[in-house]
Image (cartoon, rainbow, N blue to C red):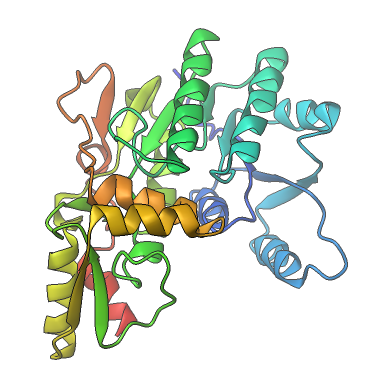
Length: 315
């Protein structure tokens, strides 16, 4: 068993004030877990972070544990308070590397029953990426292997694309929504990927924390209803608005050139788009149930947001 029967595990979320992390905090609180957020205290002019922390406080279910991952003793003290650690750190190399410090604290504390690292997105083992995303996927794979080598109880979670970023842009990382008349379609536009809402990914994350069926496995979040190609996304939008869009197909060479001359983080976002929409991503759902499980099969009670529903909310 992962936790004492009848007792919900205490959860520490690292990166809980980030774009995705705040959804995980909310899902943990909604599921009635004792929820802790390990974060740097907000500076005087950081009004957004203050508002996020205040919104957590209003729910009267969490405590902020102020500290830095660079202060190992503070991190170790926080780790010792909980049963489950969830990392929602960003995907840049600096933040991914910080997870090695978390692993060290978990090993020393000896009380953590499950670690969920900052995987999410596409499975590093099922994608053929280009730089700079290639370095990110290599680092995620290295962290994954370290966790296994150290025998740290874990769940790796992969959901392909987040609806909230890519659908409003119709796959165009360089465009700020809303989009009206024209759209750039990467490749031939026929490669399908899964789009899962940020809120739903967070819900599934919290579902796993005391579920023995997901312990030491990969959880794929791949609702079949949410498999869409770019051509299908554009067609859906045209159907909803009743207006045809002018389409420009972006070749492999054009996108690679754009990646090479774009600043960070746009070059990273474009390389993610290239990796999926041109090279394709195929989650290995034929893996043995001892290695991988699928979220919508395990948790049919979750009323996830479909691509069409999310598209409706944008119009």
